Image 1 (tube, rainbow, N blue to C red):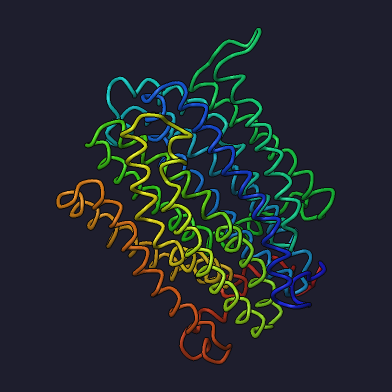
Image 2 (cartoon, rainbow, N blue to C red; image 1 turned 90 degrees about the vertical axis):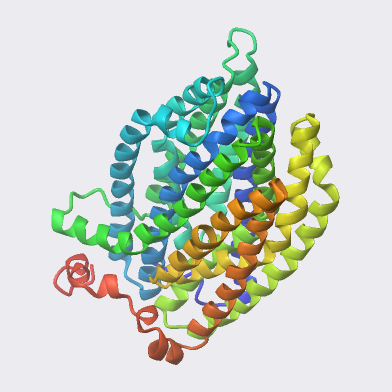
Length: 473
């Protein structure tokens, strides 16, 4: 397979990768914002119900992203090595693994809706609304997990344009269906929150079909021959070596947000609704750094596989500088326009005030959040997910949650938001220095971080299985 990211100017390559991803991430966040906007017109309870579902939706999304991260990491390095058969087998096995994971999570999710959301603090009048939404959402979760892994495989090949187009189509379908299914039109009855969930499932189904078609017909990355069980297991282990820690790392954030949502629930439905609006606006403000972090992984993976370590170091310098500039810009904009943005989604003065407070305090740490995202993607691309786990655990469980409860006791809602900002600042600064030191040179990595320089999962017996007794197919 042609190596697309190991030649040319580093800055140009990063821009070429990131710009399509900006639009793709914008499309995903746009339909989340559209859901929030249309549901907000149903009432505060409906908006609070959707806010309660946010941590659980993020958990499933985190599992998907973790599997996609693992797939992208090993596939990109295999591309850098120039081994086409390994690329195809890893891609195919990643997709079958995602199907297995989907089945497990659907069964667990459907059986735990009521007890789980009661634990999160959902009140009696909100719980039936949550049940309506999540039942449909769980049944369509295959349309979330499989295409996310498929799009990660496409990005690993250096193609970020096609995944962005796929995400844009899905967003357009979702935004078009939301008002029709939520409020009804003609022969279509108003379905309320059920309509929002159904629109999401239908839109995700388009990504499922499209990503599989691209992988098969355009990229030629899927094998249809029936492999031996040992071969499949060998591939699964290489993907899970990065994918499991990455999924665990991704789940730390929504689980933590679940604790924070429960804490916010003590201040009433208005506080939960305001927190939910602010979280979605925040996702929109961080589009550029999220796109960059998604793009840096394939770039690092391919260049590391091709042993072009200097290109990796230059890419990291450019990425950290961009995060700094973007974070400062977003903090200024949101501090000035927070109330106006909140009023677009809800006219309740208390909801608007809480959203504006969040957007005044938390964006101070956006540059540091960008450092964390880029550093995590880099470590995962190198096949060493442990640093990402450490950074996320420290940020959420050791700093954010304890400080949020303390801040809530001392300063009410403002203390919760200050805890979010301080925890990101502390870990973001640490992530910058950790990543720069670990990736400064190949020689330094061999001496100080031996595992960073090794393709250990693919140098195991699984590699021999993949290559077929030393023959490069």
